[in-house]
Image 1 (spheres, helix red, strand yellow):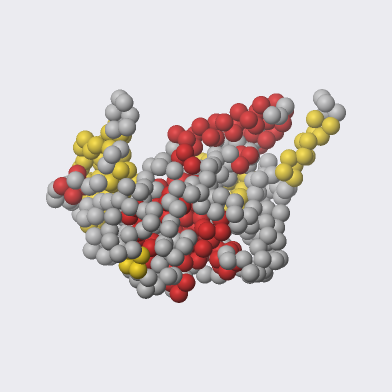
Image 2: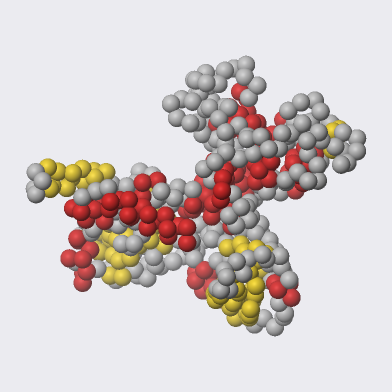
Length: 479
């Protein structure tokens, strides 16, 4: 969160520093909101998803606007300035503040602090309400009961997963035992989910131990009292609900579960082909006889790995930590939720930032909350190449054990032993046949920088069991 605030502040500084004051005023201001403040109504909900009929919404300078490009006249310098208004793709989460009724049509205005680029007006019918903890607590209140048990399981947990509501599909907070010390915990009430797990809506006070002054955090949150460290509890995913506005600006929330589209959580069958690949056409630097051609085709067709621009894939280019995280988040989201719901969820994390600043923050947050990474362990490599060992370590957290079954025997590898960083993850991938080494002896080259072609190959073996190495034996003795 601190990093996100710093990025946004930096973006604002860059925007102001690179443009005349008049330009910054027109982009960041919203005169209509202040001129008609007394005619607007404050919304009792703030979080919404974009849901425009064209696949996006464009915040307007005033209610009733339809512009995609705004022309700002600057008579003091004798010219005009064209401002391309931002598009928020459907699924992007928006923070709305107030509403104005124009000829019977309801328009909402974004929080001024939401976006440094354009906190403008959007038709309310082009928005969906985001389900929040208060909705769950209100809806299931009759099933809550007084908790009289203890907290030994929570107090002894190696990490804590804090949930917006039991099984919430996003906004989980994962804190490791190295980072916190619980000072006090008590439950307002408890709840049993459909799988029989007991949850507590708790008041918790904990200290971040990595702060020199032992900074203390107080919060109300849901914790699974039976399994407080598990971030992969099957999700209860309410679908966003269209808002039905009445003349007094009060909506009616009607909860319903996400449509049953036959998607089973944590299934390789959820990762499906979404586009076509043509050898020598999709990427001009990939030939049909290249050893990685099939892997690149699959990675592209499944929407997991993109090109580098100018019709190039750059197979021998090195993968950065940020790129590896981005790919990991896509694979995991599709694997867990299916392509449609997974894409929607990723869009909620990856909100737009001014000038592209902070494009990786949503991905980092997703990977942290889903347990793919611990804290900022990849922070030094977000924009730098990572090693083959680091990549395997990251991607080894994506699949469930049922999809990483043993099919090979690993006794000894030429360049991997107990002292090798992430050796357990490397051995896991060898045993599952996801990797097989760079030669007949099974050499891994753990400290070499991983190429994009190698990453595509690992992805292919990760999702397609038929492509994995099978029945191999590496070495004869453990090291």
